[in-house]
Length: 236
Ligand SMILES: Nc1ncnc2c1ncn2[C@@H]1O[C@H](COP(=O)(O)OP(=O)(O)OP(=O)(O)O)[C@@H](O)[C@H]1O
Ligand SMILES: [Mg+2]
Image 1 (cartoon, rainbow, N blue to C red):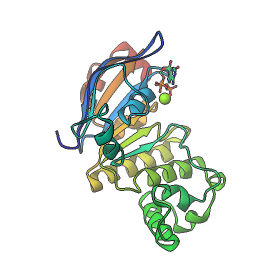
Image 2 (image 1 turned 120 degrees about the vertical axis):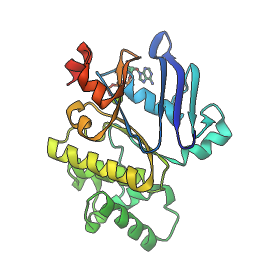
Image 3 (image 1 turned 90 degrees about the vertical axis):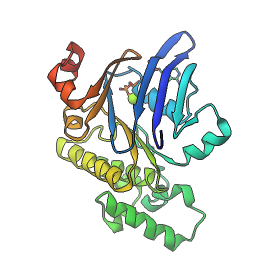
């Protein structure tokens, strides 16, 4: 289906160790999905395999109907994906505007600064912040800059790995609000990993619970809260 992320019976092992086991799900436009689960359950590995950073052992991953195995065609798909990595991965030696516009730095400087400032406004930052270095930013600001960079090339897909890690509940809500609004505004297909289940519940309607490489549960927020399993209770 159009602009959908599709995983079918995905398995992945690193040497003997099974990191993803029989993972199947879909993410559709306008229905942002959130993956939750304990540490080392395989959450980040799912996102990395969707963008082709890690090769799966078997099964199928398709983004906008193109298989991750289809190297040539998938390269184009990758350009339509924005990703926020677990450790925000900003380049410390580059100013905020350079970080945000990293994918198109060969354009005119004044144009790039202006574009970065438009994006800064979208994530609730000040246009002056464009000239700061990452070391001069707070944790929440860094996350916002990472989101601004992820959407700088107007992606159709957004993958976010722990976009609110280390933030207080107020900043967490702000970030989730920003992300939800961006997805609505640009009709982005979004998949987020979050360890902050309580906050995520306020913003996502669909959840996947991962446990030791397997999908323990998937469904709507309503069901998630109505019949919580022992693991879900633990995560809450
Ligand atoms: N490149 C790699 N080589 C070998 N093992 C790996 C590699 N990447 C991840 N793993 C292993 O895969 C498992 C799942 O890791 P992953 O980072 O996906 O977990 P996670 O659910 O994101 O954890 P966390 O909540 O701590 O971020 C871990 O046991 C990890 O050690
Ligand atoms: Mg992780």
